[in-house]
Amino acid sequence: MSSSLTLAALALASRPPRAVQHVSRRASALAACAVPDPSRRSGLCVIDSHNLAYRMQFAMPELTSRQGEPAQALLGFCNKLVQLRDVFPGYRMLAVFDEGAPARRVEMLPEYKETRAPMPPALRSQMGHIREAAECLGVPTISRFGVEADDLIACAVALARSEGAAAVSIVTSDKDLLQLVSGDSGGDAGALDATNVTVFDDRKKVLLDAAAVQAKHGVRPDQLVDLLALVGDASDNVPGVPGVGQKTAAKLLGEHGTLDAVLAAAPSMKKSKRRDALIAHAEQARLARQLVQLDASVGGVDPEELRGALPAPPAELPHLRDFLQHHGFTQLERRLFKAREAIERAQRKRGSPRPAT
Image 1 (tube, rainbow, N blue to C red):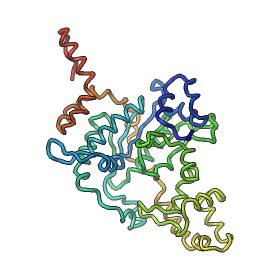
Image 2 (cartoon, rainbow, N blue to C red):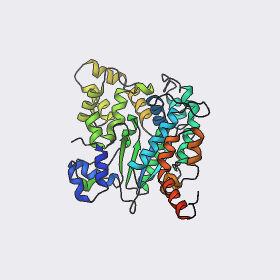
Image 3 (tube, one colour):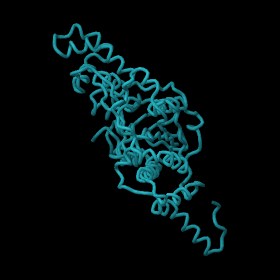
């Protein structure tokens, strides 16, 4: 069985401990703390909101709201947040957004992300509504002008760990955030970090742990930054060392441990194009490392957001129904408020007062 945790493992984690025996030894240790008992230490689900919104824009069929505005990303985002509330019961939630250009990295490399296409106007017009949707669904939102969401997520993870959270799961398809994964120690459950950090792939519905990162990229999560520094990151226009691909980078890091050690060893390597490239582009690799390394010290995350109340049931959220009706999301409204309406009908039959709105 894969070392990543499926939703089946998530379900097992909420049952008595004996049920966890159906997943692998490593997955069992992680599953046990992936969905903690809310009566004890709580978990945190952090949503990479722009990443999710982009994916929903292109995954959903074209849709317009009652106002005639594009709405497919908005509806997809709402549906995903509802799903995530079910996947992570007992977790506090936080939606993190980008705002403005990534000032610090652009200062280091003016060409940073220069090759990316601008956000489609149809998606840009929905971003304000998407942030409002998160708030209406009881999910606090944060952003900071000029600071990338990835750095804010790193900050939130660091705060959650300092607060003693049982687990943190980051909802994203961005490989850069895999560097935050922790919690695996070669299958030794007794050596797991106090806070287990995973990445949740909402498309495949699996939690990616440290062993999954190792299996996919050939390095531990704490080596991923050095791997990307050697390989580069085309999606962010970050140059690496020419001629060094992922397999070669993983092999070098397996032999030497760190980027610095690889670069220090380069002059003594057997003469080859790869050796020459490592020597000639050493500073470029060091710059790339600075660019891909997430900065947990940026601030902008209020610790109180991580200590707040757990999300209320959808039917108890004061602004959600009006929001869904405004945008014409009738099916989602019915699904979320069906149980409440059944209670109201039963109470009307008995002549009981209706529940407060």
